Image (cartoon, rainbow, N blue to C red; front, side, top):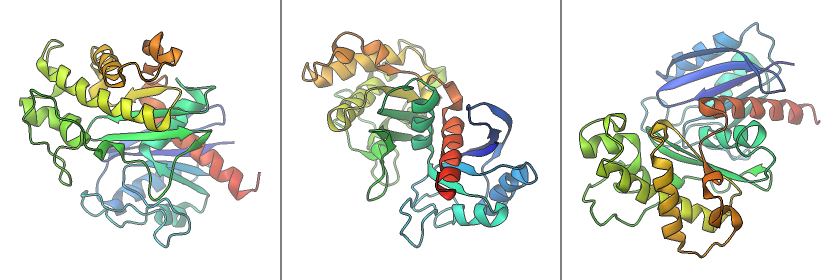
Length: 295
């Protein structure tokens, strides 16, 4: 069987077709534009390719409550034209197949739990640190939803003593995303993070904020693996700095062997690299097909 997958990002859409082993056989990428034209391009890719179902991991926030009249819609995004847009309904009308739908970071967490760095574990947290910051949560073998879905990128953090940057989040100013996402690095230092040398003070401050957040996630959700992806995390020198800040924040309180003896194997990059989101979307599609057929 073949399943469709969409990784719907704020700047680009990646569409793929794969099988039940997680192998992506075809894929296409294009910029995220207005919703009507973007969803039509996605639909056109899948037409005539005999996919049994499609899974979508999308930028958000999203309405994921199946009992809600606006289920499947994007909610409060500032992205032009997308706020309130019926993503699932539009795709289902165009293709008439079961649709699995979740956040892009939840999809990435699911992909990593199925075939990646958290394979064989029943819990993990997946951070994407790039244009924004999102956290996908997989606990007891299930993706976490609730009132809405995890939005840990907007949690407030304790200020670094050397940081007077106001933050750039349009809603909260100096939340985690406002202080530590890629655009925050650009706004604070005047250049893209990829242009900053490894010994630049930016990375001490970046690790301080991310370490606090990860420690909080460990204390509240106790994931068995923490996976850090996204464009900012392509700076490999960040990993040891973040692990050090996590240990500082925990201050010996969590004495699990994974933290005390092997934190390098606990806080890790994605096992699937940049394909975690698309792989997770593939699993969402497979699950939607199973639910549709009561399997």
